[in-house]
Amino acid sequence: MLKYRVTHQLSIAYHPQTSEQVEVSNRGLKRILERTIGENRASWSYKLDDALWAFRTAYKTPIGCTPYKLVYGKACYLPIELEDKAYWAVKQANFDQTVLGDHRRIQLNELNEIRDHAYKNSLIYKEKTKRIHDF
Image 1 (cartoon, helix red, strand yellow):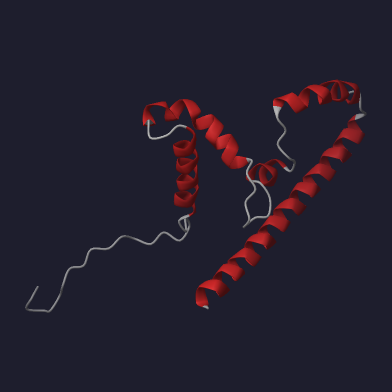
Image 2 (image 1 turned 135 degrees about the vertical axis):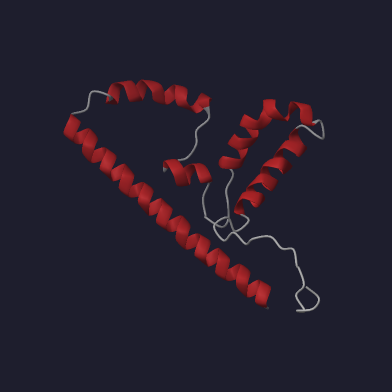
């Protein structure tokens, strides 16, 4: 190899699909678990659901809403808040099927609007971050 002036270099493959977002999310979850439980990692598995709920319902600046709202199109309610709405939901269950279909299409359109808004917010956030970094 020296004869042909070839040197070996070790490197890792670049994976553009991830763009380190998984690592950032995992770091956030780890931070939540460390603050609520401490360094005792034995009990992390018991509190993982609570940490995920806290992470998914926290406002994220890059997308301009919570990840829960981005996926489901509505705010996340606590179980206590749902008790009052249960009776209302039972009363409203006697809808006509065409009305239900129209209502569902409207909900899906609203969800698409929320996702478009989050995408635009992420582009604006990236541009601001780039300007700050390049400055």
